[in-house]
Image (cartoon, rainbow, N blue to C red):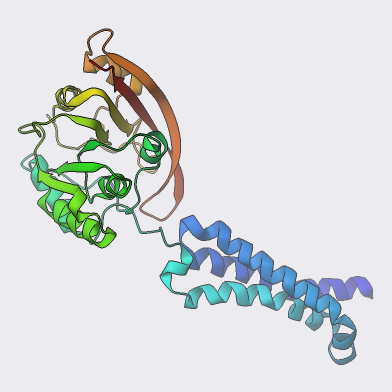
Length: 314
């Protein structure tokens, strides 16, 4: 009889918990799903504890299966409340990331591609600085910095917020306008000089204590990336840092994206710079993994690479 009662209780508890986890998974963004499941578990544990304490009372008034269902009900309630929380409660840093592989025909220039991409969305990037930049640049003495291909400005704004005087460039006017607005919102507008440059044609003519080139890739054929990076190295002041990050391969959700785009590793980038012997010191060179949100919302692991060089003092 007790076995039958336990099986009957399972008919209530199983659907209740399954529904709770499904609601949590659907309501929370990918970066917050673990936290949402934790809240479901918390609700279950609280409910189980309360249900155990009230077992005697419940059994006098309700059948055993219903008692189990009442104990599990807080788990469903915890998940259901996610639907009514403001978006920031899900994950204040989460914003949907747009697909990287917009179509590009043979007549579209590099500028037209990026203008179209930025103009077509309220935001393209997450708004957070690149984690590898934060890791490798934190602790450096602030000075002057050049951010090549700054996009919507997250890296430049992060640098400015830590005392750097930043020149940030991009080929897209829309991206620069958006970045300038974000800088104003962050209270660092006076520390960033936003400049439009097609780096294949023009380049800021000043030396800097830090030069960064974060994921300077484009579907456009013919972008002289190696030449641009050599120019970036030449812009580093004695004692300064050159920091380059790039993708080690196509996105895991679309391994065939842009097959004509060459994605070199850190060693290849270092060789292509053609730096004079004895003038530079390699501080970091290698690959790292990071989580990235696919267009369908899945969280996937992507491999990138980074190169950090220091120009020896004169």
